[in-house]
Length: 324
Image (cartoon, rainbow, N blue to C red; front, side, top):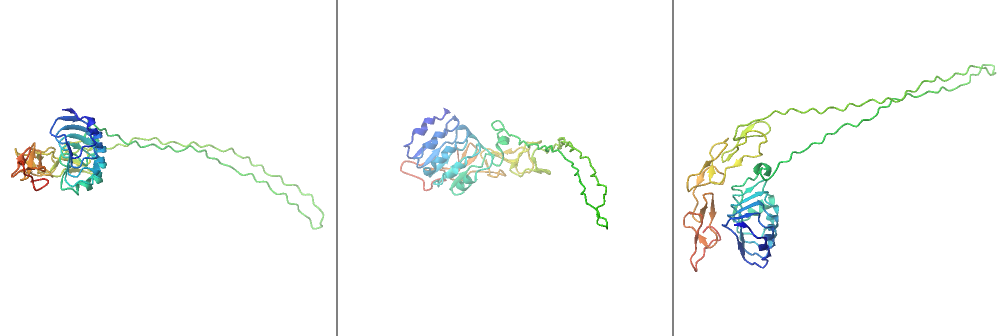
């Protein structure tokens, strides 16, 4: 029990694997485990009570891990770090189901898991739902503020030009000068510029109607849309989540537009899309009636077992890496 010691990160000469599973460790996973770059096989952190965000430093194990990376059945939350996509040397299993991960699964991690033989990270998590909705006790949604632009007050000027007439002499036919009265310029007064005030418009609040959808439905901006089978929503007023939630492991539903899911019968597990319940197959075991898990190397199951597989006797081994 208690926190996992960060001093484990000092075991920098550890060559094979590190197993800290099936205990009651809590708190955060130490980021110092990312220093164990000499691990050549596996890292087991599953079936504990770890919480908080997953340390991105574990992506530094990219030159080491080749077989198994298990961190399922904890209470980890937040986004899955994209740095885990650097574990490109892995060829075995990558299990991170039954946590509280949220937001979208990074594309780097999606590509990594597509290349592995055993993968389960989406079951029991809330990918596709923003973290402040999925884990409101841990994350807070921050509204976006829109700045208000006010018009600039510019003076308006009105100028009247002053015209000065030209004095043109007039000659009589005799060639003698004739004294003509000199026209005097007409003085037109110039008006000073007039400053016209600019009226600043008053920002009036826009009345947005309140939308209420029945539980089991989401508002897509135009209308209430029912959640698909295998999913649910218990939110009936804004703010609505972006997506309906997948039923938890061990639950299912066969109807669209429901607010809760149904528990599977004793000894049965829910399918990955949560639309029906099923039995585990040979080479797998039922973990706490939540998920079918493939037997690890050196263990086997001639038929579906509960909570663990059988261990090979002395001098024997399994032919497969997993699922024997």
